Length: 182
Image 1 (cartoon, one colour):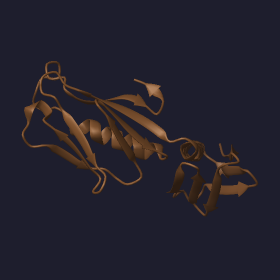
Image 2 (cartoon, one colour):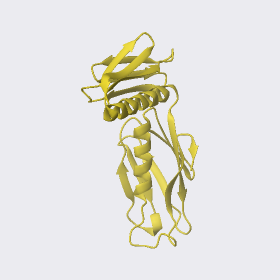
Image 3 (cartoon, rainbow, N blue to C red):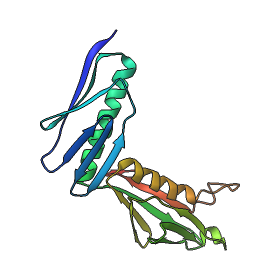
Image 4 (cartoon, helix red, strand yellow):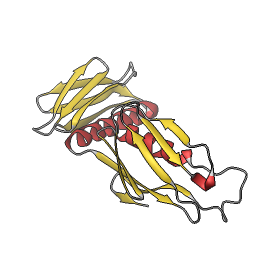
């Protein structure tokens, strides 16, 4: 059954939001995030200090899309107020793992993982801050999805293949996801 369905999101005073068609741009003290929601049927409007997302004749599928877009925009607003933070822990039993991040070329390097001579490397995208404090790696970004993807990329860099996971428990593991302990 088709019904009118609208979601309203209040905009805090220290955050500025611009809506241009399907593009939403959010600015705050911690940074700026821009995202394009490519859903033609869904209306995005800004009235005073409120964002209105909805459709006049929404089906179940469109209601799900409206709720997802509302969640994304809420994450964008909270991210520009306070950055999302993921913590990873470097764990080793025999061979000491060393990690480093080269900010010039955005390269993350893991050395001496399971005694390997060749270091494992990956390139991390822009818009993420990496802090390394002994055996804890902190990933910060106003964009929640980007911070989560970078943390997952670092975690999968030390994935062990063709060995028993119960015996070889070395690696880099996510211990804190955006404020939640794991």
